[in-house]
Image (cartoon, rainbow over the protein chains, first blue to last red):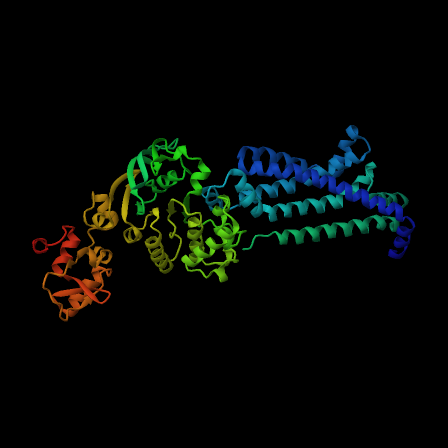
Length: 210
Length: 328
């Protein structure tokens, strides 16, 4: 069966490459927006209990809505498009990044922070020189969780015409042909694994010696 | 010269019935090591943190070399005041050398000067630079971490050094050796040091002068000898254990009690003792050898004598016996 799938993939190589590009673009956009939005938000919530209660609960509430439901909820506003899919995936990416950033900064040893201020660092210097490097590994771990979820879930985009490797899955589904389904599923699995591995290595590289 | 001066300093925290610091006034001479001593909650740490403005007073003012600290830019003030805390607070993501270099870098020193300073300080705190420069804090013992903490605080050549129970979390043996090292560093550098502790022995051992605090107030500001022998009130008496004669003896030094060599006095075979030895050992020596007099010997030369009478007078805080004054 894998052989047949490979033959199909070779026959539809251009389509496969385009779909992979689309898949990666979807995931990257969602993850990018997630990072740009949630890292600063996490810095804010870690400093303000009120902000933490509001923002983290709001993001967690979003998380319980299934991705597929979000896809369909976005449809009336953005249509059967890339944008709808990107929004749904972004919402998926938010919670792990936000929660990890918040937690990472909260767990910075208060004595280290006091020493930093006591030595005459400004707020910004404390954030950039001390808190950021200490929090980085945990933040990246949140990004990793988000990236894996987004990479796998980007498959769903095909259901609403968002493209990506999911098109082979939906096609296989429609034609009841497992071979075609595998042409989508196997690359998604591989991409997800590579993402997981790559970010794990990055996380290890920036880990603070203990 | 006065290096740090507290003038009617108070600190009220909202919702607290009594002030954490209540009208404290005292001055620290340049080059002195002054210990703020008192039970927890007496306001000693609050007072210390007002010096580098980690806490701002509700009333009164703190002066650094006669400048109100509120007139100094807060980051610049803190870069001129070394700060050592009990939990050390080394930056775990930076090496020992990078930790020590933080303030010099903030001050914009050129690289070669920073590198030289790091090595100089590591040697001063007895950590071999070649071995420790590139280690991370997690690879050091608690005592070594605090040595680095001390080196880091001294790195920017601060005008004063603030130490908040720096040896509080360190085992007794290491603590004693760190205290010795602080004293020997202090003999070289003559920094103005404010040192917070609740450990009476530590205070008596390190201080040029002690500020005894109770419930936010300064109850006595005096030399260790005077605090021990002439406590200002019952609180100080209980705190320093002034009634415990044996304890006093172990904290007072021979040089506090001895008298100079009387004119024409020739040392024969009296038992010898060093001026920096404690009176407890002196008393033990007197009892053991049954000699009436001890010769105080420094660098192989007799510099004074000590008898039971002098020891008795030192513990009572009444100074030297009358006859030595007339003889002197």
